[in-house]
Image (cartoon, rainbow, N blue to C red; front, side, top):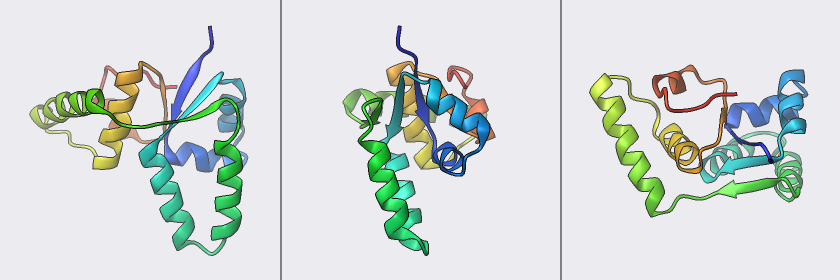
Length: 129
């Protein structure tokens, strides 16, 4: 069985920076799923940075690897989003909007999330790497 993982923006940066833990997770994953919002966050960061072209080129190469796929939202994602929103609002533990989309895709696709963000811990239904 092929093991997949959903990555957050910070873990892509860890991988690119050669952080051993991140490199090991990326190398061992059968599928590396990148939420559309992570693609947008990374590209926004590249656009605002001083090495925009180099970062964009490297990212494009990464996205075209056979084990990498982009996760897009659909109507099912919006249902998960609404449920998670209600759960977090009731608990008084909101998380950033972009991370709501990431969490919704993680729940929808039943994959573990690889992120450094502690606020995802407010969602016990998420499996974390």
